[in-house]
Length: 342
Ligand SMILES: *[C@@H]1O[C@H](CO)[C@@H](O)[C@H](O)[C@H]1NC(C)=O
Ligand SMILES: *[C@@H]1O[C@H](CO)[C@@H](O)[C@H](O)[C@H]1NC(C)=O
Ligand SMILES: *[C@@H]1O[C@H](CO)[C@@H](O)[C@H](O)[C@H]1NC(C)=O
Image (cartoon, rainbow, N blue to C red; front, top):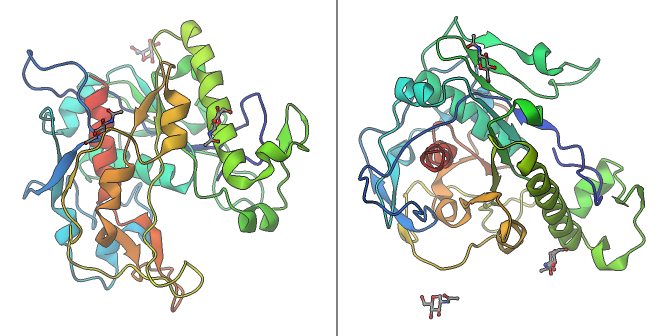
């Protein structure tokens, strides 16, 4: 989901996931520079991946995103780890991670790609094992299933052993991960009968009426608003996650576009660039205390990791080259998040 308004004030972003966990340490060596650029690095094959099985994590993983439950037969894409150029990342281990985020609350607020990241985190934090002790605390945060709605406004879960919660009220959050992106197109705007508002009134400003400008304007507004909140919430670490790339080849999602490569990293395994590929996101966080979780370029190298034609809910002839198989690429986004929570 994406906010339906463009305003100077924070648009009400739907809560996507509310997992718990923060933490993550990385930078094995104490002499390591604090600022490690996770944007640059390379994908390396690693037999310790994936961090959970796609046959497991049934409590949180949507079956339409679990490619192990489909007819897909190639799974090489599950066995990669991101190796940053300038540092090592501490190996992710669920119980260690939970201890690091003891008493913390982590929230993901954004769209369905944010929900993927939330589900990925729940699966990583449980290593895909069933966990009857984890409590659904959605009601505590006012997350409810509206009458007739397909899904609630959000989810919140707590790991009692470490009192770690995953979810959305700023004063109760320690780690916030925002994202938006793919809902910013005319088709969705029209289909959802959304209108643009700025400062509480319908927008007549042509400078932001174009969708790409409205998106940029909104990202900037939200990040600016969040940055202004931070002094009042000194324990809050805020991240804006850059856009997740689509990989429709030979068409778009509705005109037969495909992403059926089964060869990982056909276009190279490494990234080394001094700019984010998501200029709007990079511009918005510049000069603020909100950190950029820059997953765009590294994810662009992983065109084989999408659901492609394999979803249980797939429609004949339509491929999903936007969402990712889980376990998969969003796990790496969470590993980078964990590393930056150090
Ligand atoms: C759990 O963590 C919260 C902070 O997120 C804290 O206020 C609360 O006291 C903790 N609960 C227990 C039982 O330690
Ligand atoms: C994005 O929005 C910001 C703030 O409104 C503006 O300064 C910047 O020029 C915009 N970027 C583009 C590419 O229009
Ligand atoms: C970015 O990198 C290129 C080469 O990799 C270099 O020529 C350029 O000066 C760099 N730009 C900035 C702003 O650092």
